[in-house]
Length: 89
Image 1 (cartoon, one colour):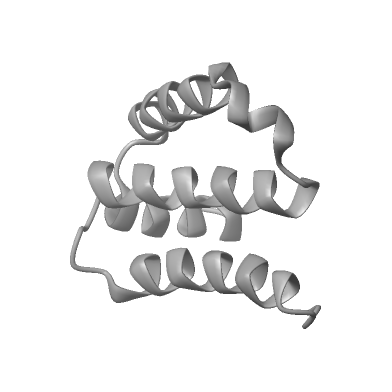
Image 2 (cartoon, rainbow, N blue to C red; image 1 turned 135 degrees about the vertical axis):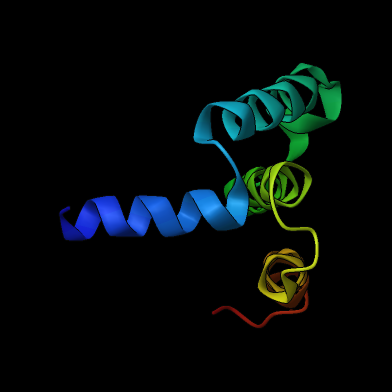
């Protein structure tokens, strides 16, 4: 087993099967992209929302009690909020 196989096995145990995760995330993103408001967003706002969708997919498909996933969601929101207040990271 290679290092990559070990990493993928660990991620799969934590977040569930990647194909299932991808279905959830792609459905969320499709809804976001179709909304008229999507086109008003700045690149960092779009990216933050896409990353939040990714984290939501991991939570729904895998371990909902893994705190880092929830912290990551808060972090992406904070990055945009901070930028709107003049703090770039």
